[in-house]
Image (cartoon, rainbow, N blue to C red; front, top):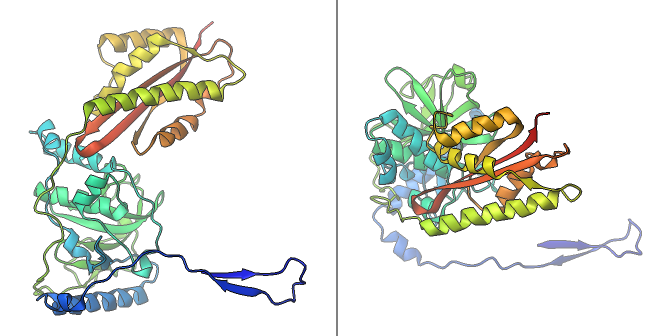
Length: 400
């Protein structure tokens, strides 16, 4: 690092001093001869060069459109993005939940992927130094970037027999995004791995704004249509006037996928989940009192008990207030109290993230006299320590 230093008593015209400070990051040593012995090495070099030229030409045509052709894996090796795509097994628990409903199975698998915490994008993808993990590493570490989430979801869909692609584009809400495109009988569906939701191409509520690039296990396609707005795009990638493809149709890829043959999932410790739930609830109650130093904080146990019964049903999508005894109890409370609150759902990353999400609701700031509060926490555990956290905080004011 180059550090500039100016004397305090010097005028602006005075010259300063420059110091060089070296910060040790690490090192890697490998014998180049070992690389040369790999039969695929020379072919791979040709493909990587082709990919760089392809990307450069695409950027010359449409500088603002996104395209990624190569990345580095976690061993520091540069490879084609196509090698990340391979049919991989979702957790058996998810497949067994809805055996006879293929549409609901896709939804629950998409939801599972959205619960894996996201890593912030710190590098500009145009600098060519993206590092992507395999799908198995993404799950075992319980973290991934946008592209890794999309690859994982795409691989799950391929396992279920869907025709699926990773789509790079931009979103009104999230900026640069990676979606999954599935080709149905007479339409295309766009799946957002960060929310678990899907939209039809012409859905006005779909946040995906532009469509720039597609890739699967065989090829990379760059959108060369003049209009890349989602509703105007033709997804028929076989038409050369619409899509520019990286590899010729007769190309034989010698390098294998870097993904494993299958993903092995671990069981999530149920007692650990229960301890975490209790810790979150205790912490939030203490924080509520900290956030209300001038007012007493009263807890309505009856309402809290009702909310605890409701939250598990919201996770599995049957959260309609039906004839359950606790839900009827909650409805009776609504006749007595003005209730303000709503459930918060989020992947679990750390306790502070949960505290911040609850604080931002502002429900604690109620200044009505005699206000009571209700709090419920529920954690739904999935395999490999993927957790869905639900927090329901409500304020209750009795009707006069």
